[in-house]
Image (tube, rainbow, N blue to C red):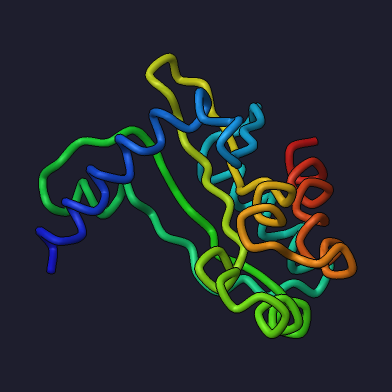
Length: 149
């Protein structure tokens, strides 16, 4: 199991390295003036204050370290609102692959911290979401911006 987690962490690290360049592929990446853990602590506080459920935080770099691998700080938080998400999934079942929502805090090779998440517009196009449901996921940008203040 530890080796599987290490392999996943390594693959994830490679994918993350492309995320800034892949902003046109549905990923929005914003700079953070905080450390990786503090960035997600701030986001989780904003989410909870708005009644959003925080399901889990995954410490990719911490798991890599447990199996003797090095990885720059990288953590993912998975969160959402079951009422809003269920409406989306009932309308377009394939969106379940992208829900619950996720935000990735990661440090690059220069020590800069970033916060990345799936673009709601990309998710709309990818899953042919109806406009009436976009408010359910478009709020992620506002929540991220508040956490990065």
